[in-house]
Length: 321
Image (cartoon, rainbow, N blue to C red):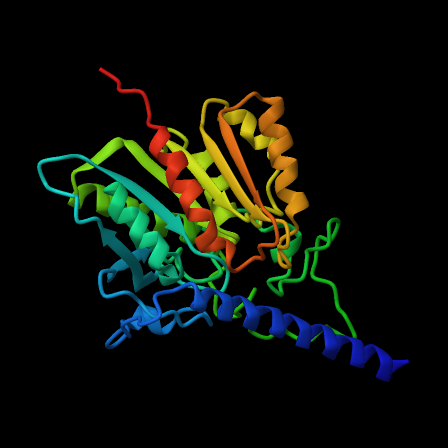
């Protein structure tokens, strides 16, 4: 029996690794066939996720000194500026949030730069403190793991366990060196980068958009609701919003939202997003839903972008006087 269980566990882990490998392969094929390698990564970049994505030379990989309490370290973020952007004209801005285990560069593929350039956008990708930050969002069942054992509800003193569970090892979801307030730091990083970009560029405050994939899609919903006065529209792509309730949309009834999800998603069930669509319909919100037949979790990043950019182009915040 033990041998059988161990065999099943090994098979499951092998299947997960295979899925991740397929996602990386599919995404790489969607990129420019002759990408330019980055010269020397910044210290922040060396901490990045397992996805080592070549960066187009038009993308500026920057870093800034992030400070919060005892924490003081350089964090990386990515910036692409359309050739149509000029200092004397207000430009639209898109904040794009990467998925779990990745870094900002994954959201700056060939299609993303093509559409951002054509639309005259400034495209910005924060790190979110690190590749596991979840942008402030409660992680729910998928991230409840993070290796931290739950507290006993009624305990007033630490319990003594004769056979304590082994300490969790570093994984895609968890790193023992992560600060305990990682979610809050991740959220703060996004808002720091947004603030820096708004000060540097002549940004159209009526056309600031938020989008993201997977963990970043969940972060889009969380930050989209929490800072709703900033955004002109939201674009969650295959959002891993396991820790969020679709009822939160009741707080942003006038916010335009586009969801995109592949019905062959092997990592985040499309049924999760359909619940959000049901709520959008119930609230009679302005929305679009693009469910892509046969598209899985990785390739949806690039394939979703035309519909997301088209949706953003239709919506801006009302001008206030």
